[in-house]
Image (cartoon, rainbow, N blue to C red):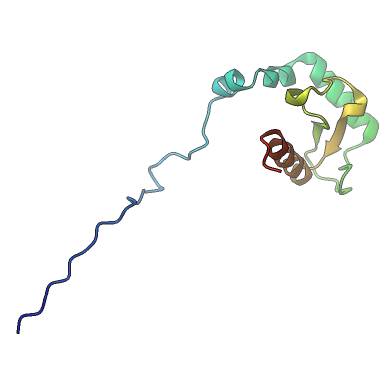
Length: 115
C-alpha cells in the first residue's frame, strides 16, 4: 500500500533578515520638522536660555521621582501641540528620562483618544 505524500503549506508571512532591514521608525530631522513644526521652537536661543535658567533655579532633580540623573529634560506640562504656553515657568517641569518618556507617551495616548 502506497502512503500519501504530505504537502508543505507556504508560510503566510515572509521572514525578514533584521541584519539588513532598516528599523521602521527612522525619519530625518527634516521630515520630523515637516510633521511637527513646533519642534523648531526647541532649537531657538530663547528656549535654550529659558531651559538653562529653569534647570539652574530648580536643580537637576526629577520633580516626579526625585532622581538625580546626568541628563534631565525640561518638559512642558501641557504640550505645545495641545496649546501649552512655550515660555511659561508654571507650564514646565524638570524630569528624568524615564519619567519624561512615561509622561510623553501618556500625553500622546490622550491626544489620540486611546485613554
